[in-house]
Image (cartoon, rainbow, N blue to C red; front, top):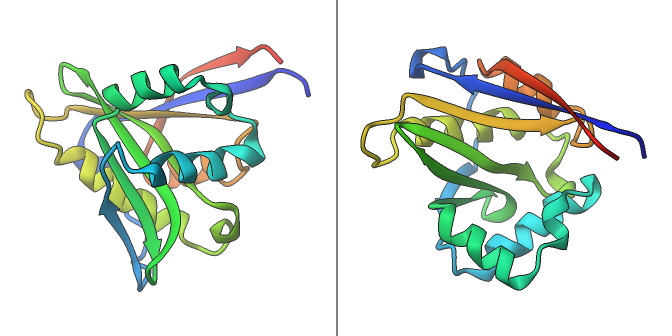
Length: 165
């Protein structure tokens, strides 16, 4: 596999969100960082794309869980369909560190509405100062629908990087 291109995207105002149409039965349900479901869903989402976090040691994973302050399971009709994890980065910055669907829910029209719900939650997190910027990144190794979905929801690219293979 060759080099990957990472694209960093941001939203600097809640009114930049272009919501997707609602999907009946889709919801984000909060889950504690200590719940094994967070790691299990992360790994199922990451596996097809070879995310580097798959190789994290238990210590590194615990360190990340200590910084990622909010997690939600994406549920579709009660089934675990994906994961959203966010981190406060200070000064009103929120990183959507994990956003994804497990393979059997990819390509079925859930991503846009799941991202809409995630962005709404990001803008309303109980942080001080309040959120002023929401950002995330994706790469060419991720699902090909990821970048177009982020852009359709109103995220704007602000940086690209070439990541070594």
